[in-house]
Image (cartoon, rainbow over all chains, first blue to last red; front, side):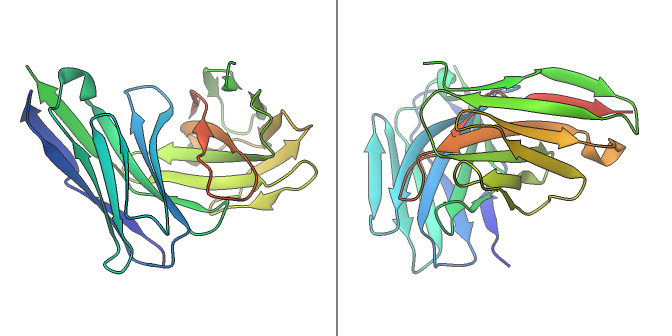
Length: 111
Length: 113
């Protein structure tokens, strides 16, 4: 069964820390991987999309890496800020339409 | 651009009632999706429409029907609501095929009593 796991489920850090969120998937035959941010009571905002042929993608303070052979992706957030507080979701495409989501990491960054 | 819009934002139904959740996108995307999000379960795909005129079942289609009304609109219908369908429902869209991102609407919070 194709499953996506995110660890830890929750994380609380002081402002300014660099942090890493982890995503693992059981089936390495992925098409793409997408990271999202979800604020409480809101929809999902796309952060980064990594194609299966890529090793990483960067956007501002965010860097996402992909290692298909080990079934892992990481989202690195540099110099965290209170505004980064949200739930971060990892989702794996197994074809152009089928997206399997992890259950997310709830991040709190305190001043 | 409004992106992906959903109506209503909130809804309370009694068991056995029916309702339709509406979704529209103004990004000229061919593909549209309906998900449900439940605590501890992540988001799960209910139905999707890869292009206008086609629909396919996702992971949890039982109890739902969909209609791709045109390229912009994709509706989700609950014919006889059950408490197990209490959830937050999200619509999404993307460019058809290819390595493209999915874009999500703000969600509909549905409670079935």
